[in-house]
Length: 286
Image (cartoon, rainbow, N blue to C red; front, side):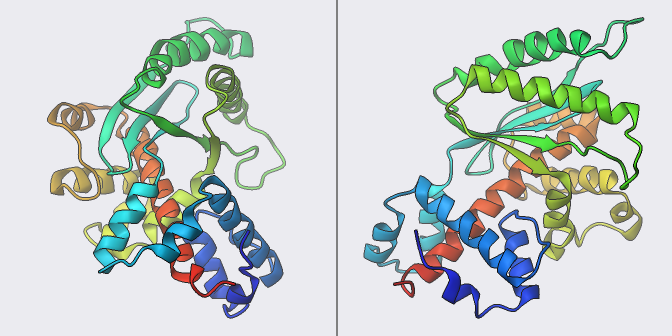
């Protein structure tokens, strides 16, 4: 563990909140809470990379570009990212070079006349999605999936005391997905990712949204679709083959495909920001 407290003490609360957001962490709380949250996150990262401190101290990078290239090699090889819904959902496998290896929209095809009881969802999510689509990907050694990201579903809508029916349905899908993935691949870390943190990662990045107009930014769903379309057209941020690009262009549910990919991109950005911060401060930490 590293004594990060004396470094973080020099930050003001707004700076700590911005730092937390750049790591994909919640930004609420007073200064001690933020400092503890950031320290815990950084030390968990170090625990997964026991040789990081010694490597950083002994590596004389010749340039910032060389350092960032090294940081990229320290990132997880690839990630599996899910955007959830109870009628259809999307997932993507993306590697640390931001290249899309697999990208798919799945129609759960609820049987007509059936209820949305968990007993109906179970075979659709477990058999059609996890066993039918995900298991073959996890068994491909060339993909080397090191983490699974699942869009965290809210328990309530807009702070309402009422729990809506569609919320219960998608929470059921989320529960079954978590359970079956844990049984299938217990060793792969699985993370619940709040949608709000992903949205804030991209809407606050002016260099990536400057091509969008105000009406497009007003809707988060539309923002994701337009942003992803622009990235694919310009070859920005991701690399994807022509077949997957055409699949996105032809898809009726572009928002689901966009969301799972933006979540993966945001997560890699958070990991990169964390490693960059640690590299910046390891030499000053005693």
